[in-house]
Image: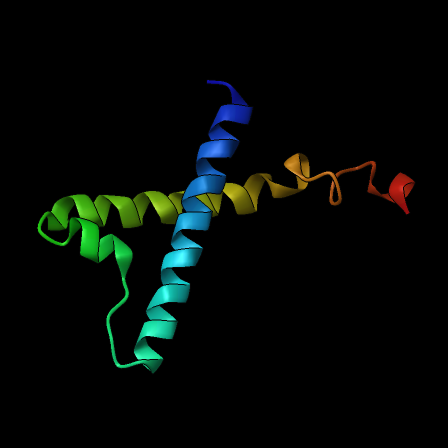
Length: 81
């Protein structure tokens, strides 16, 4: 599997998860539930759980591979400074 493709899918899932958690936090201050994943997939709890698991796995993947994929954190980062 192409690692760039896997990185892009993982990155998108991490962004989706981060935005969803942001909305959950803002919604809780407003006295609402703004969990978009739940709003969209709430009638399919197994699919909702799969989305949460995929987002979590994507975050772990990004944590493990970040230094290799990141231009600022990679081995050539000292040359940029």
